[in-house]
Image 1 (cartoon, rainbow, N blue to C red):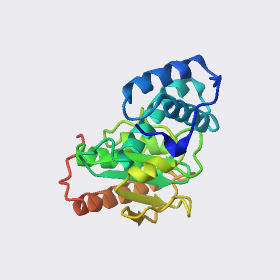
Image 2 (tube, one colour):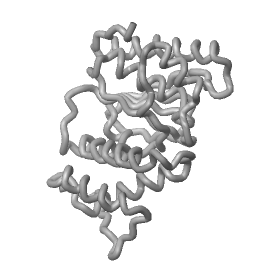
Image 3 (cartoon, rainbow, N blue to C red):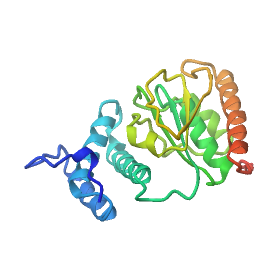
Length: 223
């Protein structure tokens, strides 16, 4: 059972929201035998705090916290060898996690047909996705309704086989055995729709090249 960095639960640990306590209990059961409850509690609270800093719409905060905490725990378990990953793990990192990395993630997931597992994060995430980015992705018949900006955390970097950076500077930690690439892409923030489409198309080309390097045959996008 994994206890991260020897962390221990604080007596009388306080939950700012009741649903966080329920979430911690659910995830502790899900990851029983992998993590102790104290580690799960820490991850739930850290994930909630990380999203709360930039969240502009609190309506989805509970759902996003559950997804973020669960994904981080899965990533940590993968990195520690407690859970095997049957497909390559790719992490896309940009600054805001509102445009480039989100487009790369959804395109990689669609073009790989699930033959690659994708995560994305931001070195300085903002509250919501760029509406123009959502629009140009939906033009391809793809859905971004479940995507949300999230902060870069050490666990998802450790779990990645390939880390693709996009203008996030030196924020991404480097681990031996992990492959790193930097894609020079224009930030779509503030661009006209045609310019965002151009960024999207460049990302699509880069993704196709990445899939070739990973030995994955690309799928057709929805008509």
